[in-house]
Amino acid sequence: MSTTPKPRPRSPRNKTIRLSEAEVQRYRSRLLRLSGPVTLEKLLDRTICQDALEVFPWLPSRSVDLLFLDPPYNLSKTFGERSFARMSLADYEAWMEQWLSQLVRVLKPTASVYICGDWRSSAAVQRVAERHFVVRNRITWEREKGRGAKHNWKNCSEDIWFCTVSNEYTFNVDAVQLQKRVLAPYTDSYGRPKDWQQRGKERFRLTAPSNLWTDLTVPFWAMAENTDHPTQKPEKLLAKILLASSNEGDVVLDPFLGSGTTSVVAKKLGRRYIGIEMDEYYCCLAEYRLERAAQDATIQGYADGVFWERNTWAAQQAQRLARSNRSSATQLKLLSSD
Image (cartoon, rainbow, N blue to C red; front, side, top):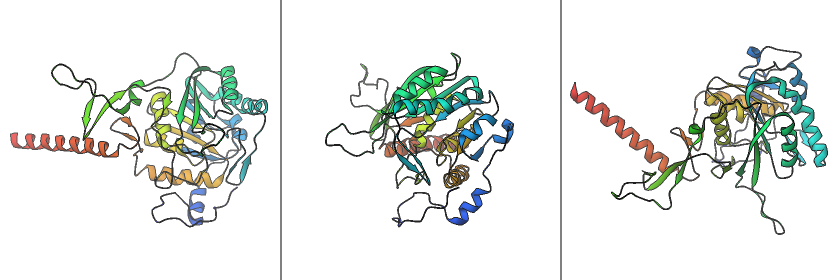
């Protein structure tokens, strides 16, 4: 059980979520702890505060549509009051095998699995995944944060392995298109745009999703989703995965929930969720974010059914304004015709 971190001075503009001791007490009462096998109904839309390895044997079989795994990478890292120590690649692979093999049972035959890693752990992730699933792709996403290196390439990317249980699985390709800037706006012989549209002062094209993601922003102090979790994933990243590989009402499981991003995005997108996290404070952060998601379902970087590149807020606003103006004009036309 963790305690509330000691507050540090913050800028008034800092939006990082921090819970008071009273809030921790409040959200602690919502957390679930298992002592034996349970039905799916008792787990849905809950946060389980427990060591995931204790919980796995008690999860119901063939109940999960989408499994998102963001385990500790093979790095020495501190998470709240717990630490993970770097080990040999062989030992890391054995550690992954120990718990991943237990999760195969809980997946539906049509389920998809996404496993996060970095360059140090990616080889072990692939080997373990290939023993249990059909490995379909490796997504590489740009983590624009990162320290420069004088004697090596700057480390600013991470991998996500996309797997399925079988050859029958969900993939909603049209739900994860990217609105991308057009640098060379071609037109036809009549001067009409070729596969692009004007958005305010800029030109954009809807493009098919690829396995290279460069449009993500790692949460930081100016973002409302930011917490003090050291390896928090962007909501936008989870939105891509959930929209592509699940449908509304599907069950999403995250056994390394951290501060709750997977559950929060699942709630915003109409999915059911089960989150497991051993650190109590992070669980309380997840519950706070879930409560806030009920009032605000927006996901930064995802709007109007498409994903947008970074630094396109003005164009997004212009599109919303144009749509609002069209809607107002339609209403006036209908009123005038009565």
